[in-house]
Image (cartoon, rainbow, N blue to C red):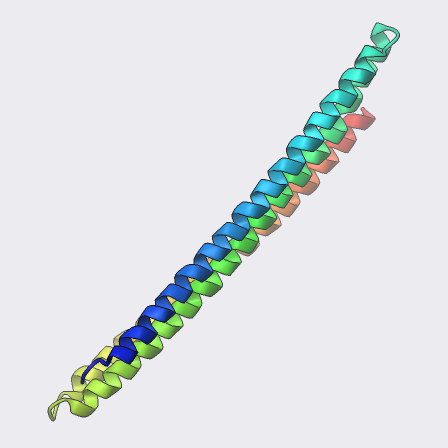
Length: 180
């Protein structure tokens, strides 16, 4: 079994495409984080200015304290929204990375099994047992990989549920504190 220059070129192209897809995904996540942070910083700066102006215009200590306590609720809501946005970017990026990884693993498995089949055709008599054993090992590894992927997806779903519950708890806490 010989490897041709075309096969090497195709393999290199596939590897470069995978690296470019990975880099593009990471750059998109970086860009989302940069935009998210810029928006959060701008909003926080504008809130500080508005709050300072409002406090400067307070007529007495009672109004000053009332204004200060009124600033907490919107700040908490913005912090929760920011955290949720960060989590969404991380979750989306993780999903994209998982898809890319799954595709590369599937491609690698297909190529390896194809190579084994070609080697088996040119192998001496009796070596089919070794080829069958290798295929069974690949099937077992694929099964283990699939199980790990399922567990990771379940963990992600649990984490998403926990984030949603924590967000609701924080919102409810802020509402209760505002009423009190």
